[in-house]
Image (tube, rainbow, N blue to C red):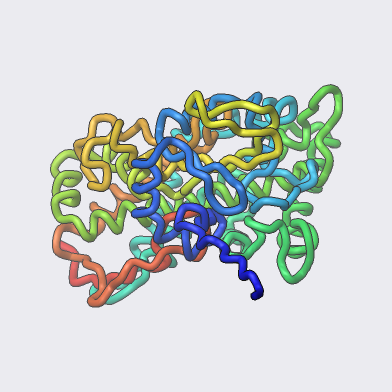
Length: 415
């Protein structure tokens, strides 16, 4: 008699792969189950998924045991140091680079750019036909952050459309997960036209610096930056410039898109913001909590340690910080699956990270969302715009973001 080995069927928990968009976009019930079972879950590929708020904070705070180097790449993918973006850097390089990013996006810089943001928002909204139909993603929520990013980087404004196309292609490809496309491995090979464009901008900054011109834009600062007596290489400046472009475009676009979707589907939210504009700040935080543009953050364990006091994690293992799950932790957020515009602790979400690696563009994203929504509400009074008949929310085709792929609307008139 031949013995047959029966292999146990993997549970939903053991099969969960956060790098699979099809799984991630429908994982909310599973995440709730994982949180109920404990603060750390063992998932696909031997990874550890941190489910609750306090434990996610602890991992993000511990930059000694948990490394940024693997970034958002799937297990086994290694990115050369020179090609890493800010979210893939550890000290000592991370510290001065982040300082440059923060300096370039200070509240003062963001505030000074607000008139441009509003002018751009009004211009985009004026182009939406009344009466008529439009897709708010392609007409408004996508272009606005991209144009603002191009403006802050000091790039030619006429290049914004092409930059947006390259960014969309990159973010919706397999590159964020695998560091490659069918064209090749690494940014230079996978997106040669995008690379050539960034290199031209770097050449311009280097040329200006060689003539004694002092520029204040972030790319010029990256070109001039010295770490331990050495300038960043061309590949490093290129990677970080790409990081600024993509980071400023996609996540803010999802934030604005998610918030407008909430307003268009929840009359009570629409009314609350119109009655008291101060409510908009809380609505932004609640949207970031409930529909976070970024679903998780990935870390690599470099020192044997524990999470939650008794869950061992060994050097070489991958840890997924489930920020989206933490944002719905019932121990911190009452009625956590409900959008509550009056929620007093919504700002405790982990969507922008926590600790030393908190997103340096958070203030800019919030400002753009505030200005975009206010311009939208002023342009379209109550009853003048609605989602198209038969609309169904379809998520953007990425494994790490939440946001509408389209927001088709119909306008019926403006008072």
